[in-house]
Length: 542
Image (cartoon, rainbow, N blue to C red; front, side):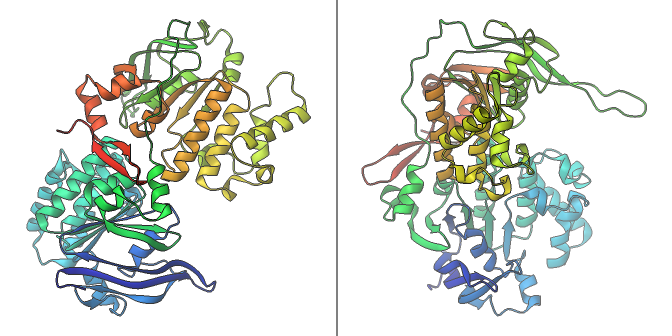
């Protein structure tokens, strides 16, 4: 440990109490004052448990079996509770993954931000208020005075994460632990939050421990990285060196799983479109009160799009852009207020049953879209319930064949959704959608909740099935890295309107609209090298 080392971890090991199962295995690293340090790895790699041990916030079932944690030379493991309470918040702040679960829904934002100042400072009430308002302005809250009396549910995910960051930085900690701080956010908001966090911490001289499975995001901001797999550190070093020439096979696997641009396909745009939407408008009714009816909110403003046979059209945009509403409207899950939707040259509503059999949807979260009371085989067979010409035996055979197609053997047939991993559940959701052999598929953020390696597997599976069965697809995503890998054509939405569209390479390489350029600037352009590493170039930056 050198003189400028703020945090020193030596041979830290954790296990599940009573089982002997080690979840963190003999890890060591140092963080210097003012440094931004990253820990990357997939879900289950032990990175979150390891960092919770740094401030003695482990779950009751996890115990420390060896090693030490020293903060500014003080042994954290042997600190009494009173000293730990002074350390947490005042000297070491934590930004958790999901702000809605770490902010109290029953307390106003003002009260929650004031709590730490009351516990750790001797400021008067008026001084606390002024400091809170100043911090809310710094994190980009438009109406700081109004925010003091508002509740967490009144803010978007990005705004909640800004408020969470404000609550931590109010106390000016020497070390900030950021655990997956941007996982649930779209690319633009993710970059905004990260830039804000880096600016605030640099202004205060705060060191940052950044934990994430998003390797490009970590690489953008850190000087050094630790890579964890199955509870152990497999590689660590300077960020630039590790990306350029990774030594461990697991690091190379993570880097090779990042989305890269695929070869463009030739799509015949002169053929009649499989799906055609014209001037689609969707209005949501306003909130009703006792005395008056609320004003309707327009979610889609006359959206038009064509999707040709065998084509994958990506619909991209930030949260609230209307892309999911548009996908659900085409599927008939949301009714349009006006406009026309055609399927194979005739109105979708003329032969509604045929359309619904030929149009299937893959939802963002398979855990909520799969019935937890049904087995995997039953879930896939259910999609074939109205399929003509198939008896019970034929349906079972088709369901088993489809499960095999998505990489799930017959051994999974009698399991339930909770017995599968997130990636396996998404494979089941895809199997349900393709079992009917649809002509058109809507995929709504199908890989947004998956780790990088699982995401790569699901995307490869998706592309393989699309080529094999030739279905047209509307692929909805805020992740332009994923879009670059799978899409033939890209349509950009903002505030319920289409602002730009074109073939994938044109939109990515020559964007016309400022909003499109902003979306693209939030993701890296990746180049693989002959050493198993990658070069990250941030788009549209000079």
